[in-house]
Length: 172
Image (cartoon, rainbow, N blue to C red; front, side, top):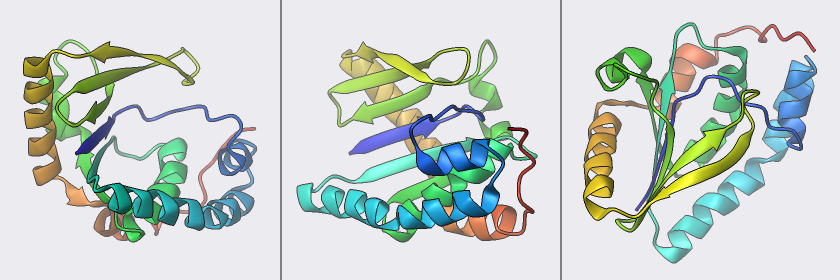
């Protein structure tokens, strides 16, 4: 099992053509480039199936959604359409876990390793802390499973909350 929890509402993804078009304020181009990535999303899901890995991804969402999140949801939709299991959880549902600080971005591979992904102040990935403690991993997976079970399937959320939105306002 592969788990991923995404909490931050803003990221920088230089080098990703769709993100760069979005960041430049060209929403139509960003959508076209995202759609061009459909085969990549399908290949990711097919690779998971081929190796027998189940992916469960949880996307925490603040409301109103940020322009970045509106853009990211376009690719997450492609992953969900390709067969990956993605759920959306409103930020209010994780508030009890964020009494001291916001949840980190988390990646868990089976029951062997957990990564807390690190980002710099601009929202660019800059490494991760690795945790091998099986008890910590089991506790984290238990929390993630609860959030996943309570979440809304991404495609349902997308149709209800994201699809009706106008192009996001981005200042290049």
